[in-house]
Image 1 (tube, rainbow over the protein chains, first blue to last red):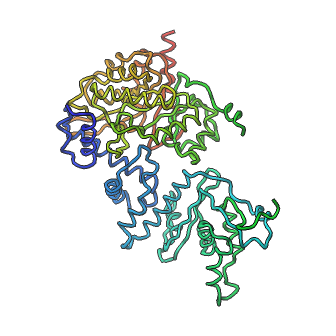
Image 2: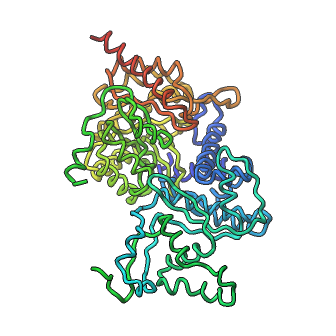
Image 3: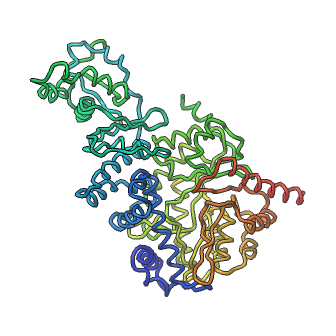
Length: 267
Length: 291
């Protein structure tokens, strides 16, 4: 008799890899053992395809069901599940697609997958109330440059060379929009509003400011790269710090603020 | 909300011996906003592990309005790997938060060597597996500080090594570990067809006092050479032979909390509730005949 551990190890191998190792240990009962093993091998593929499909419906729509199923099989081989909870199973899928498609004309797929995974993570994340604009009134205007903001935990910032937001939106259920892949880069913020996950495309100034603030930069340092770039530019076209900050605040991307090296003005 | 008020908002009623439905994400909004009359709900534990996730928030809003059971699919109790401490810890945190009337898992395994198959896989019904299963259920019950229910699974193969009929194994697990039984009537029917046994003999061997809940679901037939194998797909209405078997189960066990499971290709909530009405009608008819 096989030990329970040996039998389970043999089953794992039979369901994922070599189907020939198990049938001798399985009763016939009117259906050939290899066909019975085949049911579990098929279930194995269906379980992980469905898990990825739940997280990456846009990628599935873009590549088609058959291709998606083939990618799911490959992904399951490279990234076997390590948990009884499937909610994080797809976390390596964007990197897997980068490896698979990074040098092809489908190289936008990893960015689409990154956006879809950001949506998944924000669904699962701890959240906190967004920072209200009125909170800034606690500080002297002279100290604004020293302000350090906290980005909400349920926020993801995604930089892309492709119109990733437009691709994502055009492939939501019921949409049949066509996207010109040459329409340019789109940078995206994913966040929560109540029980809904929202995806926003940010202009370059707002995105870069948010990314710098997320890295812990003081407001004056976060904006410095833009100030340098705008030297010599038409002043009217220069990025607008107040506008970018207003955008970030109105989308609820920030949750807290302190003044580095200076106490709050009215506390 | 004060801690005291939070406590008071929990629906402390036990699961009634009536027909409820499985709670899934697509139904959250409707159940929160419309509060349809549903006898009770059962949630898959793992779907609500993220304690600050949107799904957990929905469950916390639903909880005060309905008796609720938590049903796990990922603890892999029958695996020979050590119990996943993190998974168990998250389950305990969910149980502490939601205070479900019942907590259940499966007579199955699903991982070996740290690699998961995320499936409910059959055990060989041997003395070794029995001892292992009993020990592991006791570990889970000790951690959760409450008895759990164990559910019989659908299976598509039996091991040559199995020396104990499934129903005897299930009863022995229950008696030796102190867990209750969640009898899935569809799974008994599916296994009876797939392995060639009489489902009535199975049901009649189960002591009524050990049965705390029943499940009903749909299945799908798949051709395997000359024969068909029934697959537990949870995406179709309950079949006629399963309704008949359910009637027999209610006659034998008396009314028990009964759940309609429908876990993919989701129908409108009304369709699910009409399946629950059919189950309730059988519970009522058998009760009236017995009265």
